[in-house]
Image (cartoon, rainbow, N blue to C red):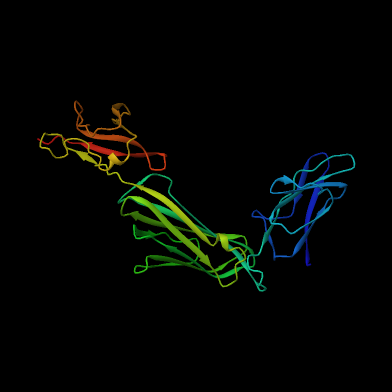
Length: 318
């Protein structure tokens, strides 16, 4: 049985409830292979009693300066003096298990995450994807490659300059490749993609990351994002003159969302029209020509309310 010693140093100010532990803004992660154990040691000048925690939960019986474990988690400790004066909770020590026990050389835990604009999106509208890759260590990562496999229901509009590295796009495979020569321990990089939804429905987008070094935690090497593209189309102009073309505000696809509400406001913010379960009957009756603001609320397929905002111009052809 191999035991590794990780020392957690705590400087205490007794009864002032202040404690500080050595660490970094992103806690450094210590890796154990299966069958290995770690010894955590708390150092507190006048400490006579301790309490260890894992993921914020007190560990029964872990009341000494040292604690031995082979379990992953975020470990912290409290210390107490002979007068029962205590310290603040220490900074955490992170322990993770290596997925591949055969890894012996340098390795790096790379984690990729992906998110998109939270605002509602309709077909033919552009929105942003945000990619982030983080190296949790313990070694610097070289030859880092992030691949974003865009689904065919998306069109790549543009790629914003990344925080580091170079980006290319293969039209044939629909893949974005982001290459980072070196990503140091506890550093991250960001990339923004601008895409257009070509059709309504759920868009599933997947990004992966790899590097020259072996990765100890493969579960976070992939990020899958899902976004619903709404099936509605809202015109930006109506021309109510009785010719049967654009006489009312017709919102295509709204029939797919039974629960909805439309509000129309003038430029002073006054409500000039409001209707639940909109019947496609707003024609600006009694209103002057001009630009009006609309707010369309619809309940999507997941049961969430989405708000679409924009402008519609009322024109009365002569």
